[in-house]
Image (cartoon, rainbow, N blue to C red):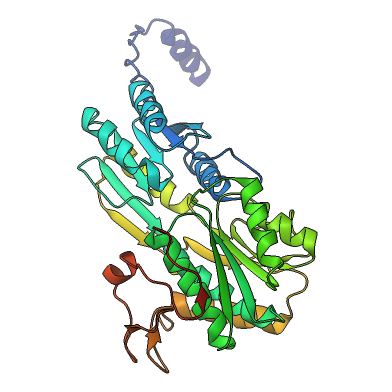
Length: 366
């Protein structure tokens, strides 16, 4: 009986009506967020632009197919910058990072014509509803590098090759000098202005001239590795900036002050993707992970490395402020008091810095 019932049921299955269902229409895949980056120099093995390009790559690694990035390198500040930024906006880029101070005004101009595009003016200070600004507290790393330079210099005389006398650069020069003098109160820093961010032959010549004046360690605020290469060639010491440059100066590098843009760029891209992007201003440093000292050279004793890293932790924890006068008032190199004893500069004062600290041999080029 059960056998016949099973057979009947099996046979009956073939008589059940079959209802076909039209599959639900699939939503078209979302277009990836197109992100543009504008670079002031070529993408080299190290330096300012290299760090921004590493940030771009970090966005790709974090967000995968949700984003599509483009970069344009070696874009002069001025009319060319406006043309490149405008072209990126016209070709569907909905988030554009312009990575040099001189791009600020062109960015603002283009942004007026493309209200639905988000712009990030890196090192700029003017915002708009669709233009945000971001910068890093480079001076925190400079102070730490100054400690290392003060410990490593045999002469107590350092050199500094600088681009333009804007507050960001002045902050770095002063913090570096204060860092040196925190461990060697008699240390001095000889300053050379170039009035350019990127000119490797002139950067090299400036470093060589400083070495000829008794400098045995040099720092710089320019965009290439030329100063580090000059130090390696002359058997001197140097502080790398932007990137770790031990590949260029394996014997010369003391430490590197590195810029970390990947976290910020990824956060801002996510904000565009989820609709939470807002204009604003970010100024992050050691605490936020945007500035780090690393890449100690082979000549740097373990004790010096530990000291610098300990001070880095202090800055991150808010225990150390490079522009706080602890033991005595801080004066500029004309003798004027610029930080009263026991006081620290406010962010507004740091952002408007227009003086050179005592110990710097040089003037602000006007």
